[in-house]
Amino acid sequence: MSAEQECLIKDHAACGGRTLARTSNARMACLLLLSSFAVGCQGGAATGPPKAPPSVTVATPIKKQIVEWDAYTGRLDAIEFVEVRARVGGYLKSIHFDEGQIVSAGDLLFVVDPRPFEAELNAAEAGLLEAKSKLEQSKAQLEEANAQKSLSDAKLALADANVKRTRSLRADNAVGQADLDLYEAEFLQARANVEASKAHIVLAKAAIATSSASVESARAGIESAQLNVDYTQIRAGVTGRISRQYVTQGNLISGGTAGSTLLTTITSIDPIHCTFDANEQDVLKYIRLAMAGTRASSREAKNPVFLGLVDESGFPHEGHMDFVDNRFDPNTATMRARCIFPNDDQLLVPGMFARIRIPGSAPYQAVLIPDSAIGTDQSEQYVYVVVDDVIQRRAIKPGPIVDGLRVVREGLAGDESIVIEGLLQSRPEMKVQTTAGSIEVVKDGLPDSYEPLPPEKWLSPTPDPPFESRDTDTTDNRTGVTQ
Image (cartoon, rainbow, N blue to C red; front, side, top):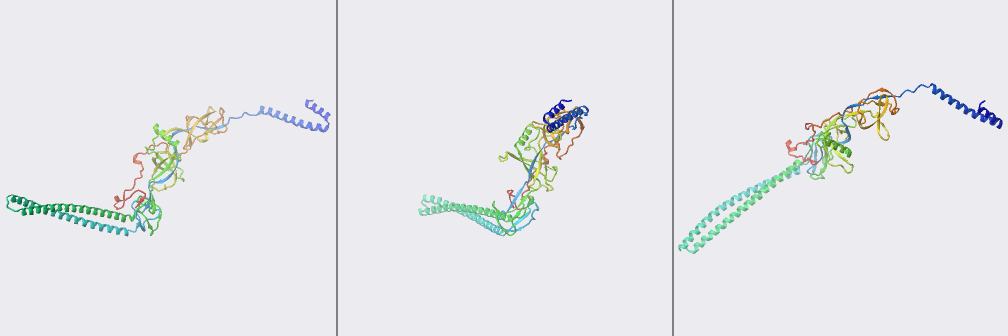
């Protein structure tokens, strides 16, 4: 008899039947539970099969030449934006364009009633004729003054001879004193006439100068009046797409000042600018790369730039850097940069947002792995490398995403077998079964190398030639007010 059974008999004898039943049931349940646990443990230890190593998928990283293309968001801007305003005020007589159409530099857009300005031109031409007439009159007066001086000179010479001869005769008492006085008076009169002739010549020359100035003033008045007549025809200052007409025909408009009536606007289309802002960290990176000679500065070289619109998957538009500002914006701590793109198909519209990619490094050989193969803990990022079917943990320094894969700057040589599937069940120093996998490169449409563009491929916003070179009488002022 066991010790437990003896205890049960003693308890039954001491406490009675009901108490004995309760106690025995509880103790029997505990005994059965302990017996089952002991049997199960002995049977499992003796008959269970050994557990197999976990299976993971491994692959060798991709090694290839890449360029790190930095991503920015830019906004498209027209190279030339012209506010069309009149240079003269008056009634708007006619409109000669369709809203939203493409116009060429020099195309007629508006006509202001020219009749008041034509009247001013006629008055200026009449004034020129009057000034020329006065000039001819002054020239005639000069000729008359010269002739009068010649006559006065002759009379002065005769009077001088008479005086000298009379003085000689007077010395011999051949003539009287009265005759000498008469000839001396004639001499003085002749000399005064010479001086008066000289004064008339000076007055005639002054009249000629005044008349010549009047002629030039009249000519300037004609040019001004002619300009006002020409300004009544308001022409396009640049080639581009025109906006709507802000003023309808028949309205009175003001012109010739900064507050002149705005008639419409024109934006150039091809080529087109795209501006974006780079933060201080990126700018410092570019400066240090230029100092090291690995990447040319965009201030000096036309580095290529790629652009994609919101509905485009890649970056089909290629241009180049055009401008980098000389200071940081103190409000945003960013520096403004600008690139330029061809726009032959007119797909790029000013005001659009665009995705920009500019070279952030020189071409170099890089190690690429899937982003899903990288583990992260509180201290570092790592990958699992399988060596002789044993997992080893390798700390890495990741870079950007290129061709759908993560660049590994430090930690991998590129010939290791890394775990690309089964990362969660892997542990360092664990023995595993490996299955060969592959890493696929997903091209993003950006090249793996680049060179700054040569001068013959540069895009420059060449302004249209001035109107006079197109055999017209108007000029393009390029100041936002066009005619």
